Length: 127
Image (cartoon, rainbow, N blue to C red; front, side, top):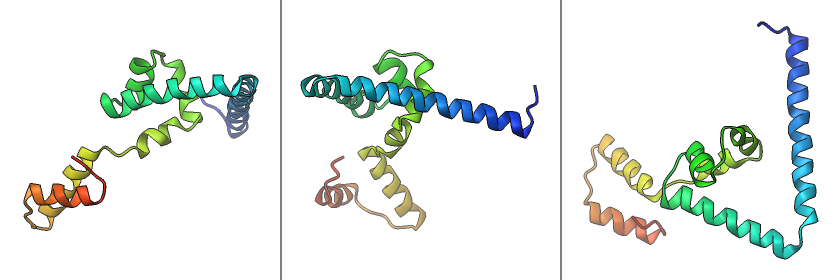
């Protein structure tokens, strides 16, 4: 099925409106909760994010599906809420070490791994 520009723009506008409506509904629900309930929910979500992101080192999809237990319906909704940006911004400490070692090898600099670990530790990165 091929869409013209007008149809594509209309579909895009409907899609964006649907997400705006959903966001408004979610924000109304949040506002209906007490501060204590909001904090309880926040802590539950953070625990799951820490488990999925840091402890289990899961993918975006893996966290939504396996850690939270949702299905494909969660993918776009969480993406529109900004979670994929948060997920992609979380840089694993081990990855920093791997990248630094790779960069140093590319420029033909050999470094003792223990010296690199000490230097990273000085900057708050423990591997």
